[in-house]
Length: 196
Image 1 (cartoon, helix red, strand yellow):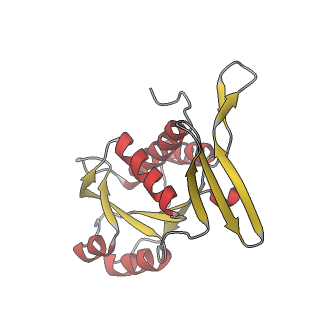
Image 2 (cartoon, rainbow, N blue to C red):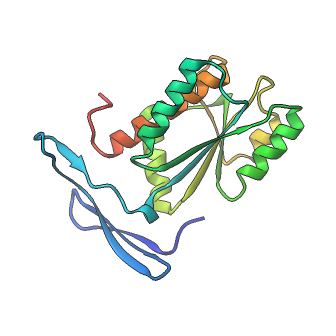
């Protein structure tokens, strides 16, 4: 649902300005960079009320130590650009798991991750996030299934179905890849050198 309190104004060729109103607060946020102490450029982070909220729902907590470390690392990195949380759902019969998926993703843009979904490049994902931000989307939920995958009914209930790979990925590995790509998308948006 687009936010009516967020307006995008193009002030010149290179500068985008958001005018926003949240409750009693009206503000202006310029999407711009400025020099940092090391001679590079630094992005001015947006105010808290403009940050997009990402929720990743995954079945089962990660058991592999390297996966837990990767998840924690990329969650920390992503936190500089957006609100990102991972919620682990208890494994069980697929119908029960999917009921929890639907309840926990209610009211957000729901994206099911499935090997049969659309394969996006990092650039296409970046463009999608830009479109959602301009449309005022505040909440996106990404669903990673368990060993049984996702049913056709759950895929049909999604706003979009994406694939991280044509390969079937173990859910802990999929979670690390997903968070790394989310981090990569935001570094591209901010003009930072992580993505080459």
